[in-house]
Length: 80
Image 1 (cartoon, rainbow, N blue to C red):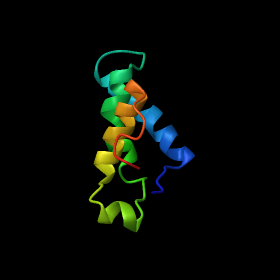
Image 2: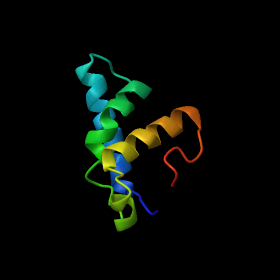
Image 3: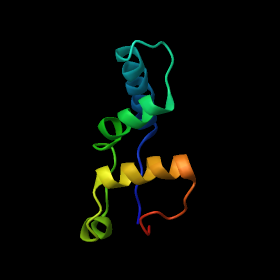
Image 4: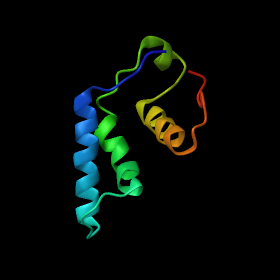
């Protein structure tokens, strides 16, 4: 399966993390801020191929699994 987001998606994630931190009354971004910002920042920037859609994988599920992978380092969490 192929999936991915552009470099601009990373910029959006960082900016959204900063916004989450400011809304929380903080000046520095935490890992939790980035996790909260991940779906809104990335869901519309990831294009799933036909195989992924046929397997019932959604962009939200993929973002959740990527966040989980980054935290735990588990390989191949959804069989991709």
